[in-house]
Structure formats: C-alpha cells, structure tokens
Length: 458
Image (cartoon, rainbow, N blue to C red; front, top):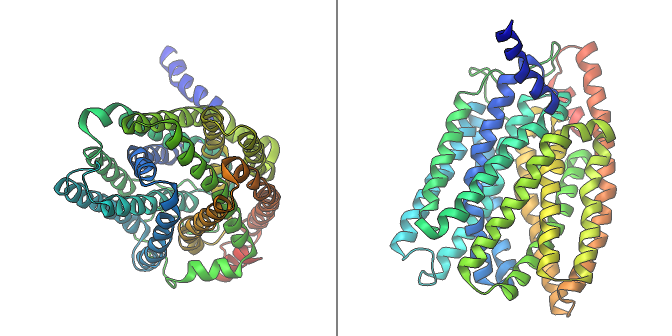
C-alpha cells in the first residue's frame, strides 16, 4: 500500500496549488516548461536592453520607441503571412528560430564592432534596442496565442496562473544568469545563452502533447499535426479589431496599461540615471530588481492567481492593477526617490505578471481561432507599441512644460482610473461571451465560421 500512497501524495500536493484534471496534466506541464524557456531567453537580454536605454538617455527614448513602432508595423503582416500559409506547429517554432538567428547576427556584428561598450557605434545599440523591444513582444504573444488556442475559457481560468509560474521561474533564472554572468563572461556572450534557450522552446512546440478538450467542444483542436493552416487574410488582425467592440476594448485596456508602464519606465530611466553613476552597478541593480519582481510574481501565481479569479471574478481581477497603479503614481508624485521607485516597480510589475497577464489572456479564449493569432498578435505588438509612442511623447511634452518626475507621476493617475473602468467592462463581457459559447457547445454542436465571427464581434 505504501507505493500507492506515495503515488497519490504528489497529485494531492499539486491539487492544492492548481485545480487541474488528470487529462490536462501533460499539456499543462508542457506549457509550463515551454513558457520557462521563452521568458528565460528574454530576461537574459532585458537588463542589457535597459542598459542601452540608460546609456542613451531619456531624451532619446521617444525616438527609440518610434523606431520600435515602425518595426512592429512591418513585422505584423510578415507574421500573419505565416499564420495564413502554415500549420500552427510549423509557424510557432519558426517564429522562435527566426529570432534566434537574429541574435546570432547581432552577436557576430557586435563582436566585430568592439562589443557592447562605449567604443561601439551608437547605431548598434539603437538597432539592438529596437529589435529586442520587438523580440520581447512577439515571443510572449506567440506563446499566449498558442495557449488561447489549446485551452478553453474555463480551463484557462484554472490553469493559466500556474502556467505563468513556468514563465516567472524562467524570468528569475534569466535575470539571475545576467546578474551573475554579466561581469564574468560579458554581456555580449549572454546573447548566445539566449539563443540556446530559444531553440529549446521551439523544439518543445513540435513535441507538444495533445490538447486537453472537454467532452463537448466547438473548435477544432490544435494538436492534430495534419490540420490545415488557419488561412484568411494577412490583414484580418487589423480589421477584426476595427469591427469588434470587445477586441477594441482589449486593445484600449492594453494601451492604458502601456501608458502607465511607459511613464514608469521613463521615471525609472531618469531616477536611476541620476542616482546610480557606474554602468556595471546600473546593470546589476536592474537585474536584481527583475529578480525581486519575478520572485513576488511566482509566489502570487502559485498561491493566489487561480483562486483570485474564482473568488472575485475576472472583472475585479482586471481592476486590481489599475487601482494599484493610481496609488503608486500618487506615492511617486509625493516622493520621487529611488526607494519609492523600486517599491512601486516591484509591486506593480509583480501584480501585472502574477495576476493581470494571466487574467488578460483569458479574454482571448472566447474569440474565434483566427483572431487568437492575428488580432491578438496585432494588439500585443503594434497596439502595445503605439501606446508606448503615445506615452513617450506625452511624457516628453510634460517634461518640456516643466512638470518633472513628480508632476508627470500625478498626470498618470487619470489614465489609471479610465483603465480601471475598462477592465471591469471587459471582465463582465468575457463572462457573457463564455456563457454563450458554453450554451452553443451544449445545444448546437460544432460552431460554424459565422458563429465564430459573432463571438468576436457581438
């Protein structure tokens, strides 16, 4: 009897953390590991990207953000063309392998140009900053596109928080690697570490287990390797957002989040630049901040995220971060100090990664499959960077009229209030669409393309 009891204990322990069904375990653990390698790859690079921003200076950030916006505008139709032509299990890993190849190019170019120090040409750092800003959006967006396609709405509310733990652990490991290895092997060699991690992530897509589906489903499962490409138009992502109030609401929610994040990023750049003079110390401090953020995130995801959505509902869950952001900017406006900044950054970003991000991904489980890849990718890349651009120039205007760090922090509060109201509406709308989808699956059988379009637009 001892072996049987021992076999039950791990499942019981896991059941205390996440409400997972036995048939969902393989896909959940594969998603967990997949996200680990994706975010580990990015967080190896993030402190290096932020170092470029600090070295460049806050006055040039709006131009860097503008370059990133143009790059995402170019990248979106290219990604959509892959969605149109290839099966999911081909274009998802191809996306990661493309970025890995880009990193290798940067490695050899930077080494030929003298590394990443002050001796290298300025354009190298600028191009690297823009590229990594596109890289980070696409690799996470493609991952969650895949997740929204694999899991149903009810499953997403239970499992996405725990799956996010995999990404958080990857972020902790990536940040820790950079903090420890930056001074030992140099920032440039860390690019090769990121390449290896991306390649592992791409291989995992090919070996992803069968998607766990309830007894009655309304979409074709993604696990069938012989399934045809999604097809459609490469511009469908843009047109779907323009036609759908729900998708437009998600886009607006993300823009308002981005405005707050960009304002805080500018505050970070300005305060860190004036408070910490040594370049190596800046890099190390930024990496340790990331480590603190991800540690808070993983604790939140393990013990709170899945339960919170069930306890208070999706609408109130989406409203938490806007409320916290308003309070945080009020504190930063009253005391624009490095200590205030660090506490605000850690709490806000930990809440975002641990609670808001998984909750936002649930919003996409009730849209048609084409929109899960095209519209979602467009929103999380181009719309996200458009929000960056709006916030960057708004911050520049505030600085030009003399508001300073304190005044700009207070000016961000009204955006957070509007963001809170929109989050409440989106959460309630998602519940309505999920209920309608469940009724369709029970009473009407497989959903037709017209029904799928209705779910996305009504």
